[in-house]
Image 1 (tube, one colour):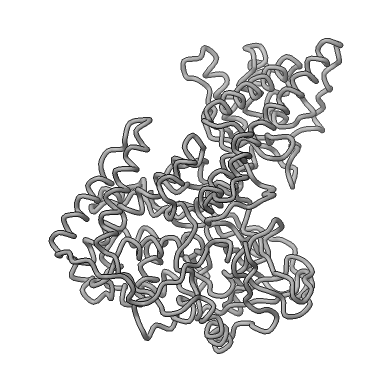
Image 2 (image 1 turned 30 degrees about the horizontal axis):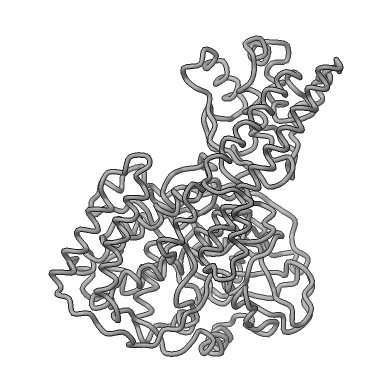
Length: 614
């Protein structure tokens, strides 16, 4: 996972230890916790709050300089130790080696020719760091008493990682020593670098990510220094903000979901060696083999000896990649921007529109997405916009007219317009809405392109501006597409073209889908297939109030973003489905895992992420 990080080598014991009394530090921590746990700022004041929190954190970091645990040497110095440990544990090590791929960082390089769908990598459970191993470690006593840890597996993994890093006899040291010393997630951005994201759709998540991480750090600092069950943790003498930021980013960029040993439920895990793979467009090729109790990965395509081996992290937008993985992926086939739409409750036709939408399985208000592809909208958004723009007569026809129930199924099908007038209205609305969103940015796309040509631009600034530009380009395409569609349907109307005839045999087929299914049988916002698990180390407060139903772990098919807001309704219970068996082993069943905070689908069952208390 070289793309997720850039290494800055830290020498053990460097930096002068700042002289600060325990009381002074605890006072600063209490102030930070209070600031981060206060009422959410009023709209428009989020940046001001971020600057204030950041100032407090920087004050704490300055006083903690030199206290963090680090290893002598670079990541590369420990790769041979990692490979030896992996071989000793029974992992596959023959078909690849770890190599540096310049801008992409470290990754896996084929040591021989590998065929597409060939099983080339497997990692046994004994190598994995999981919530289960955390419960059986020195962290166990605190886990048994702390409801935050019990509710949030990703927080547990972060603290587990820190405890094992501080343990000279930890069995996971060969893995931990090869993790990056720091990351390129926004938690590591300078204030001026974050400023480039102002007015983007990512900014709220970025600010929330920082606030939540600071709150969690302050909370656990107090727990570690006051809770009797934390007395034996190796963190008491050295638990800095930089330590926690590093652990959070390590887990956020690498956490995966696997089944427990008995297959009865799922747990979070860090998967050594396999998590060195970098991302490319493609298909999910990783799964968990319960029979052999190991994570397995097959080749995405044919690889020649010496080529980099890639895996597909999932259908994530670039905003998600930047916020949770620390990189911008050029040519992302799944990039998109969010668009919040809803029928006003004050509208005269609200009840009728809400009823038609309900029959189609779509809420009257939700967050949809505009895509980088053509068309920029999928069946669900098309259905919503059609209902949104319906006249009273059209609504009545879809509620009580002939074949009303069956016609609901055609709402997401471009072949069956409600009327030419309805199509003109919906595409006009989309064109106008996208144009208005473009006006909220403080720079133009051309200005962003000019900024990117500056050679002295920092990596983080360049990433932020690329993300900002990508959002604008998606919106510009939506404006262009909306205009073209509007003109096309206006021509149909002017020429008196007949509407396509509706036949019952045409029911329920939606376009723009891998599998054509009735709209009500598809998850809402499937175009946002992976507004996925983001390291929602969020909303922690030092009392039980944060453990009510609002922070109950949820299934993460279409789940939560990092600040704890829910972009899409939960996907429901974990879906179990059969799919074709891979060529190399017809008898093997696999379950899905995910890379970082994104999905990796394998054969057997789709296990959606259970995590992320809000």
